[in-house]
Length: 229
Image (cartoon, rainbow, N blue to C red; front, top):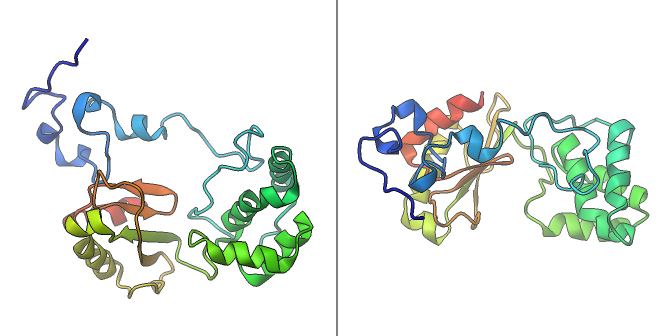
C-alpha cells in the first residue's frame, strides 16, 4: 500500500502547525511520519530514567556520555558504576577491548577526561597509562578539559556549510556570549565547530551534549537555548 499524500493545510502537514510544534531540528516532522510527536521519534516518551548501573549488560556500554550533569570529583568505579563496568567487561574478551565504554563512563561522571581520570581508568583495566592516553587523545569526542553544562557542536562541513552552517555557528556564539571554544561566564555554554555529524540530509546539524538538532537556522538558536535551561 502506498502512503496517502499529505494534503497542504491538513493536520498532518507540518507547515500548517503552530510554530511551537514545528521544533527546529526535529527530522521526523515531514513525510509519512509527520503525525508523530518529537517525543515519539526520539523515544523520550518511554525511555525513562537512565539507570546508573547501565541496565542490561548488552546496553551498559552504550549510554550517552556527554550529559548536562557531571561531577569532576566523583569517584569512578563505586556502587552502581562498578556494577556497570562489570557488565561492560562481561561483553568483551579482554579488558583492553572495554576501554572505550570505560572512558565513556568516566566522561559521563566527571564531564571530561583529565590525566588523573585516564590514569584511574588505566589502573582499573590493568592497561598501560600511555595506551589509555593515546586512545583518549585520539578521539575528538572526548573532552580533555572542562566544558560548559551544554557542549554545543555546530557542523560546518560541506553539506551544512552550503546550507548556512557558518551563520548558525555565529548565531550560537552571539546568543551564548562566548568565543569559539570558550565557556560562558555562567558555566552553561561551550560552542565549538566540528566536522561532519553524520546528518547531511538535515543541515545544519548541531549536537548539544548527547542530543541532535537538525535543520537548524540562525533564527532558531534562541528557542533552542531557551528550551535547554
